[in-house]
Amino acid sequence: MLPPVPGAKLVAATAVKPHIPIDRTMLLIAFAFAAAWTVTGAMAAHFPRILQAAGATPVQAVAAGALIGPAQVGARIVEAGILKRYHPLFSTRLACLTHPLGAVILAVSGGAAASVFAIFHGAGNGILTIARGTLPLAIFGPQNYAYRLGLIGAPSRMAQAAAPLVFSLLIEEIGSFILIVSSALSLAALAALWLLKQKPL
View 1: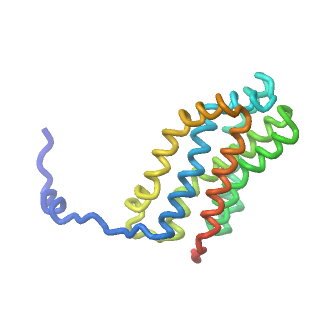
View 2: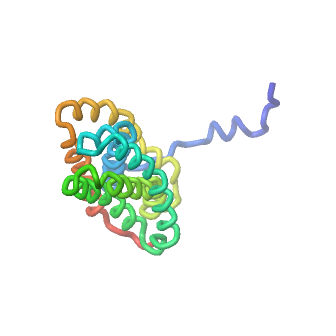
View 3: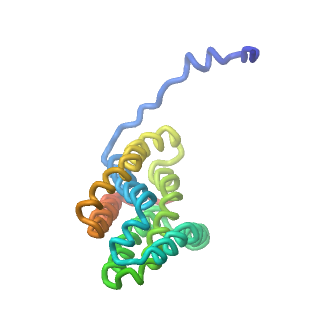
């Protein structure tokens, strides 16, 4: 049994949950991340299947899927080395644009461009994993950061959990046109981010 910690009851009694208003900026960021992570969750579950629906062979689909991880790492290196000079809002907007760009290339070039799409998607996803921590910090500052991050991230976690099932049902109905849905979600996230006002770091 652990010994009692002096003052623990006093800290617990005086701890107060911070009051954080759910304002327009909070809603825009929460929506942007929820939309973007819906795409991430869906692609993680169905990436080879989507590529094959778009015309890729099984070998091309598997090879493309193997590029997502390296693309994520490469994008994080670029973010740490180059994009750190810019406000996190810039890199987050860029991350929301890469998936639709890759989808357009895939739609125009067919299955042969599966690897290009994987690199674009992976790069955006890599930057997003950093942006979900850096963007709220840059916009709101360090006060109540962890609690605010939890509020912003709650819709993302729910959306990411539901995405594999929802996209599975949609793929059955519309096949490769699911990329229109995923691209629309990414562009909706980008639109929400464009409505944010950049604050100096």
